[in-house]
Length: 342
Image 1 (cartoon, one colour):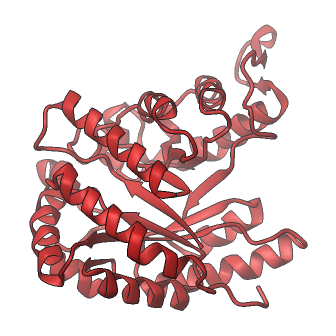
Image 2: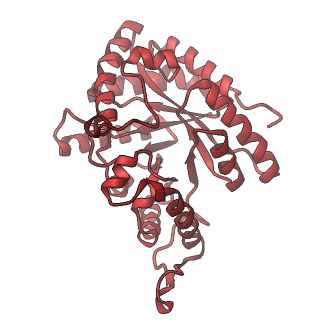
Image 3: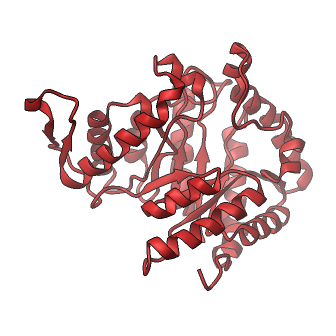
């Protein structure tokens, strides 16, 4: 069992510079605590995501951490020129000493994509066209762009990634079809959905992996959950209920502003989130029992926390990480979750 962190990098209560410094201090804490990877979302024009350029923040993270891996979950690929993205990925991998992981998607928020003049209905075609170009360029050191004039079509990269053929690819899965696509391509997955959906996706992923990646060990299959830990259930619940309201306000801001519906809605209260099984707040014993059951029920081998959200203070988030490292992580680390036949 490995452990990771997912972060929207949401903020509506601190000056931006102070917020960035606080988050970098948290990354140092995750690094010392033995977490495997920090995954950051990409959002634009909303307090939900204060890293509209994930690569800029990751460059800073590369200099503040030593062992922690990190990367976008995910790059909103339709917003990037593939050549520029490939070059920046290679730079980050070199700056970090080969600690970059990279996720790619179409962009979870059509509103944000459309702010850049990209029609939402074109994102799938852009994704399918440009992802192979980025991966091939990283692997070969050359990008072929057939739309350009002939003399410009083949472009040599002068900065290559340290990891070969390229940094590991992550994929956020929500459906059985997306799980199948990830397994077929040999990608690592993360799922933030409810238990039944994660169970179905992981089952398909294992089946397709066994067929398409025969002989290769299963990669990480991540289960993501909001997590708050305190000395007592009551303390943790008080923190989570307060902070989640602020997070949800940022999560829904653009859609409320523009009167649009959401593809991946979340309940407006912490208690509603818990009813769906997407989060836990409690003492170490409470959180350990919940996560052990979720990981085993979904056959996930990568436990991903979302501990930093809403208006929590550095001290509150540090409390969660300290208690998790000392009292929960040792028990979950040896948990057998993936079927032996997988």
